Image 1 (tube, one colour):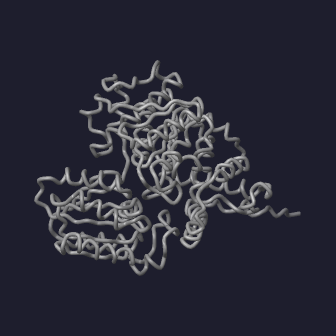
Image 2 (cartoon, one colour; image 1 turned 180 degrees about the vertical axis):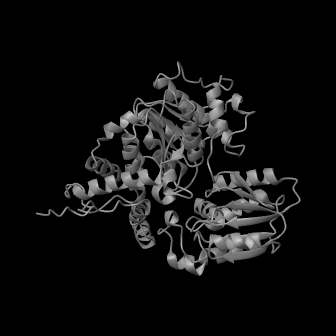
Image 3 (cartoon, one colour; image 1 turned 45 degrees about the vertical axis):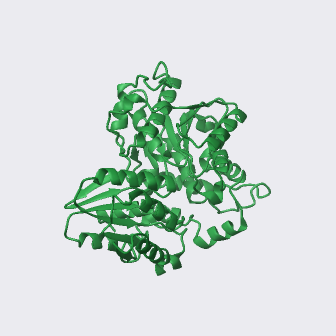
Length: 491
């Protein structure tokens, strides 16, 4: 008698995982409805993350094994996370696996979940993604406690990736991990970490006001939410006084300490892996955070002292010099075109990126081109900040305002699909046309102004200009990521 064996299901691919992940994005209409309701993130976000974790087999206390460095702030938290991870990577003999979780990504979603500074492979991403997906399919939550977690539902896009990162790092046996907060801190999905090894807070500023509040005090309160009892915390010099005072209060409430890191003199004559004079502040914080973790884990005898002239170990210097972090003060040479790329999208970061562009192009006789995209924040105000910093030293011969659509076919790269902006506004170039008009008024019509429907068209327009050019790409990490994908040429 022949026995018919069950058909083997085909393995699900990375592309399948990305399609499933994109289905978890909130669309523009839902975002606007929540915004109009005045509903801000609340404690339910943390309770739900704890519940999602339970359903895939973890208690929050299990994540204590990750020896996490938890980093928040408004400006520089991604760079600080990258510096910290790179330093820890110099101690591979004692720490074979260092995890890094950051957001957003540029080319590939896999960039958000790294081990030893490399994005996990497509095969591992797909495998772990569907392990989490299937566990959530097989389990349920009590609806009286979690009314939104009906059978078959999943966490939203960012929450799912955070959950996935915990699963990946636990299954891969990471010795320690660096976690960058997504938005805020108090109610961010990364904040189910109960006992981080150390916490860091980078420069505070005004951003994400809908979720965090309109004042520096409210924003500081949210950022200070990552502070935990028994976890030492450190911040950078030059914080706004009102925000710093709130951070100190939050540290006291949480039963921990908050100390300010000096700008270490030993970093002033090295070439950091991330360009920009301001990065020395983030690098100094990273030195402190990494040394605290390494001392806690017994790799170093003592942490680096908080003194300007403290001795910085040579592996730290190598780690800072070898840090790679695309899209932040990045220079790419392509033929006679020099691309100066920064994903700055807040007032402070736009001003810092503009100062960097002004410095690195000073004295050159090459024409300048601005390539700008910002779809969701106050784009007009960001353009004003940029123009104010660069005028009168830098003049643009061309100013190009584009959407964050990747290809001239009207499609996005699969990893860059964005549903949280108005499709109608993007298609009609509403923001881009308004910015083009505004720029013409700012520079009295000196620049030739262009509006393009996608990043590929912008790239082709610039390449069609035969003379040498300096191109300043700024305003959005979505623009930077899309441009890097177009550079790669893989649709």
